Length: 60
Image (cartoon, rainbow, N blue to C red; front, side, top):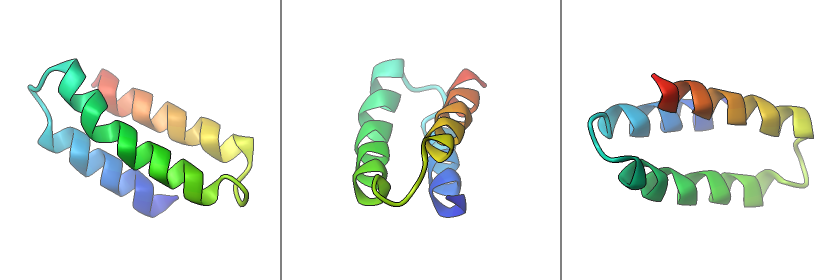
């Protein structure tokens, strides 16, 4: 979980000033890949925490 949060933070930081569309296109495959790999291992609480983290990153 820590690794995906750091990766998402780095990607969002690199995309500052870019359009919302560019951010979505960059983050979507990362999040989908992580979710596909870990969907049978993690709980909905973890998915919710990651969703909240991404929201905070993008909202900044």
